[in-house]
Structures are given as C-alpha cells and as structure tokens.
Length: 128
View (cartoon, one colour):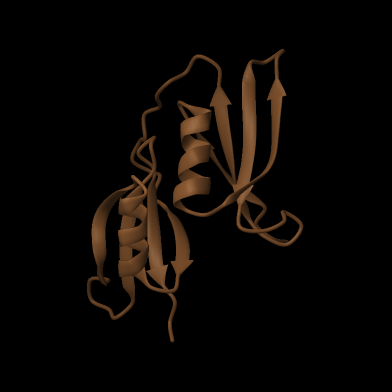
C-alpha cells in the first residue's frame, strides 16, 4: 500500500492552484470537470502520481467557504531551510502563521503557513 493523495475542498480553485503552484512550487498534474455533479478537481504535487503523494483540490461549484472543524490538522512539507522558505512564501504573497524555529520540546525546525482557504501547511526543515 501507499498513500495516493489528500483531498482538500476549496472555495476558489484558481486561487488555490496559484497558492500551491506559484507559492509552494507544486505543479498541476491533471484537472477534470464534472458538469453533471458540478465540481472540478485539480491534482497538484511535486512529482508524478505514480511515485509521489499529491493533493486533490476539489471545487464544488458555487461553494465559496467550508468550516474547518476540529479534527483536521495540517499538511507537512519538507524544506531545506524553513526560515528561507518563510521569506520566499511571504514575498510571494503567502501568509506565514508561525515563523521558523524549533518545535516545542525538540530540536526540529518548523514553521507554518496558511493557504487561501485557511488550511495549515507545516514546513519541516530537512535534517542535516
């Protein structure tokens, strides 16, 4: 078994595609539209779906906002340097919600950013 994808419901598909591609450096891998059931899917990621886990961005036509609930946590991405990633994301228009620094009670350097729909994305600095 392997993890294929994580699905996020988004309120503005193009805004979310822009965030995950332009700001976080992913690529749109495929996109499809279902006119009968009124939704559009976009799969984004860092590599081909045959070898990498990806994000499925689901836009249900006419739904602009979702409640986050209390069960969802975050998506985690490995970065070479968390502070530099925060600077790059901020300069590109992204929102940094926790600056780079050690995790509470540990040494791993992390940071958090937020996507346009309010989903949290953790940046975890690669161990040397």
